[in-house]
Length: 372
Ligand code: AGP
Image (cartoon, rainbow, N blue to C red):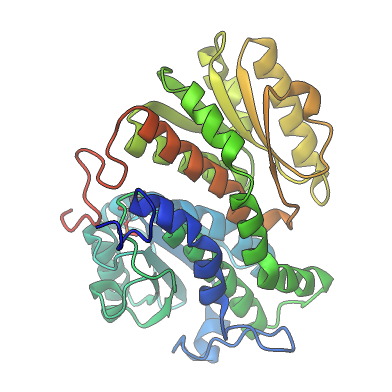
């Protein structure tokens, strides 16, 4: 009913709008006043976490994209090797796991069969499993050694939005906590990341306030057949997530690429007026990445692409090469997915509407996939 949708036409719109609160709720009570992580609820003893020599993340779909981003954060902040794998692939290739492996299973529903089978397999090999989950008492947290709940509230739309942002927050918290327990050098960077993380809900809210041009752009692309998405570093999983949203909602051919891979094949796809969304990393921090992507934008534009550039406020270098420019607030590199994903969700939702598709219940899809 309209009341359940809180006055919005679709649950997806309501859930997109709820993201600042979902993010804030997931952080609530988990960072103390001294800026330290307070995650006692994760019942894995510190001595076990100190012994961990490998982290393996398993998940499906959007949760897998959150896991891909977590890999960058975990390795950078803790220096523990981390791999992220699709749950459906992991189980069947006889992965190498032991008591010192920490497996993180990410799932909104907690009922995804592929993820459940992966974690069962991991536990059989003696690995410790931590679930990141949005559904209290569901199967995945019940079968795990520990759980960190995301507090997105119920997500009804098949296309995941607020659950994704809270999965990212939970992953950052786990990464930082692992660093804290293991005594990773707690430098200026970590301190400032924690401060910015505490403020990030406000930034997500700012993005939501500037989405009208994105909706307008989406409507103007309703007749297109293909949209490509490019990103580097954590922008790469964001590109994959933008493409997944567009597939499931707009039923369009959408693909995400690591921008550095363009020249190894995908650039052959570029043709006149092809919409290409590019997620641009901050020019501060790792500026090498930024410069590389700016030259990628130039390359595709020279071949006729219509560039839709998502870039930080104040980043003027991209202006000459952007046919459409979407501004997002400045954040530390690793946190950028929390703000960069939001325009892609809005874009896909509006395109679906413009194409007359059922937003909350896309064809052929179920909210949780309880078969392998
Ligand atoms: C995302 O929009 C999807 N509908 C889908 O990829 C989903 O993220 C995936 O099926 C995993 O679900 P889970 O988080 O409930 O395990």
